[in-house]
Length: 112
Image 1 (cartoon, rainbow, N blue to C red):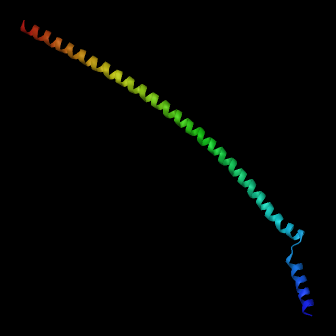
Image 2: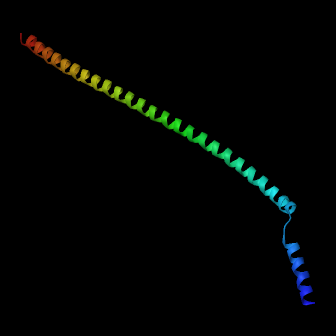
């Protein structure tokens, strides 16, 4: 009787403990679909990230070029301002000399 009971219990445990192919497939299909959806979303996000990285690189290049152009314009403006200042100083010196000459001429005319 013990052997018979042990055999029945063993058969019951083995028959209920094993999953059939259809049971496994039924439970794996939704998981597989979710994994596929997540893989597609991941691929889409990776594509968008790559696109954004390319745009950032392009913008960094444009910013660098703009900074170089601004520096060149600043250097040119500085050179122009420096040259203008030198011309103004030369003109001021010439005006000072002319004023001194005019003062001397005026003083000579006053003495006569």
